[in-house]
View 1 (cartoon, helix red, strand yellow):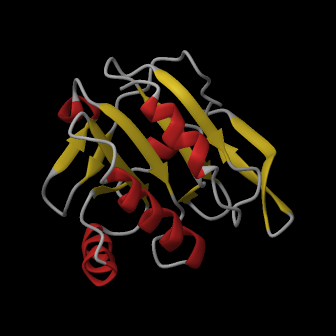
View 2 (cartoon, helix red, strand yellow):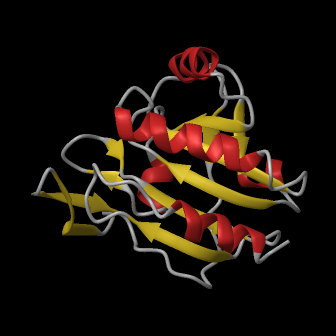
Length: 172
């Protein structure tokens, strides 16, 4: 059974349970299989040799997640070709594609954890009560070692964009 971290975070001040380990700087990032669309998957090796900023959001159709993804889309334009920005949510792939089209988001790669929620469990962000992935940020170097991690203590808070982007730029 996967580790449960009860009270590791809150939703509007109410404790929620996160499933999985709390990853730390220096850890090797777990591999993943996420849906690019209904028939294609992506894994960590698909982005081999690149610096990765993984932005995890509960659902693109909420205000904070929308703002977070739009912000990282803008930042992605200034980070160069050796960096990929991935947004992971449990939204269905066609909902992600619809949202990106409507929002004009074209520099972020959206990936869905809807099939197995294994990304959420492996990265310690699966919310037991909602079966959504908790807002968090992971920066991985070109060898997939975690160099920055932010687990948001409150689901409705925004991440520290400046620190995340600085962590990426430190690897360039």
